[in-house]
Image 1: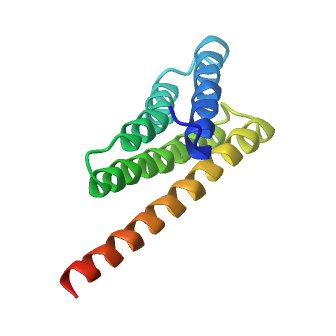
Image 2 (image 1 turned 135 degrees about the horizontal axis):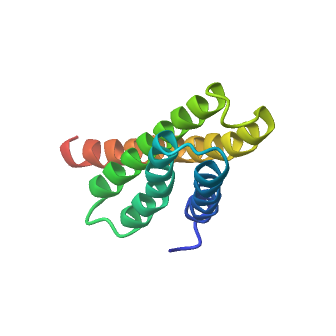
Length: 126
């Protein structure tokens, strides 16, 4: 993966999610929500990696949009785990902060890419 900030942060986040999944399964005996969290939390980085080698800017944008959706889904599972008392507030706050940071980075990338694609389209059709 390239040295992009979002790529680096998504890998670190995925590692935290894997560790949290193992904790939830072993110590909390929680298997359903934690599996959903594992899937969404680890797919973010995979989608970013796919996007980095997209076939076009539109493909890049599509993959980044999906990564953003996965990050939002991950945020949802984290909230349910906290509300379900599987995570203490301090544990939740720590990992949710990382999730929120990824969401903000992905929103910025998606907005910038959409703006750039519109500029190109306007030049072509203008």
